[in-house]
Image (cartoon, rainbow, N blue to C red; front, top):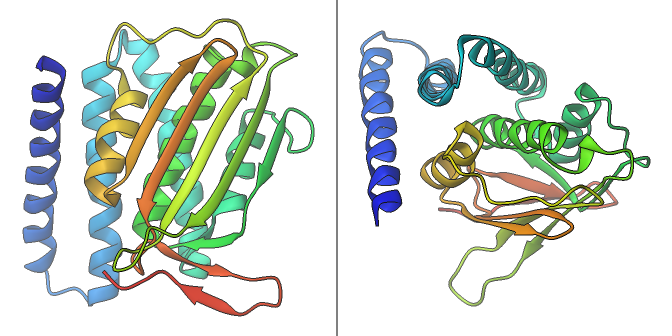
Length: 239
């Protein structure tokens, strides 16, 4: 019960921050596209700065982890500024390469071609960064025998309901992974930010052979679109 209350308090704080930022940007008379893009990015940066400070164990830890988080958001923002969206496969492979993990070596990625909208791209980029960092510091990538499989799909949810984008992050070959004793930044991103920003459901399973993280979110237009093998597009369903 206490954890649920703490989560609700954090979500309320995020919502209040975003509301204040929306008010400031709306009053500035910016074009809609630029205003929305800046609002989303600034809201995320504010949340990252605050949550990083709240969860850091030391000043050194704060500085080290904050730099990596801001870099992850910047990489996503560069792609979004160039193309207006970001490829999910590229988002994953680029983040892995930052940690010197090559696809086809210690990591396997599989799923349809999905282009993510700006907000979804930035939030998922941060979540993937936290999963990668955790795998390096505590999970599969701490061992040469460790492996990662990431698979994603678009799953039908029945009549009248939007399809789900389901992403499964599965580590194997690492040392025993136990549930963390403290509610750190990465856990807050996965449990709180994904839920608040993208209406996602997240399941973290600390299995004997490694962490399994399953993320499900409604695949609506504001999240992204798929592109099939012949290049035709299919947009997420309307909200």
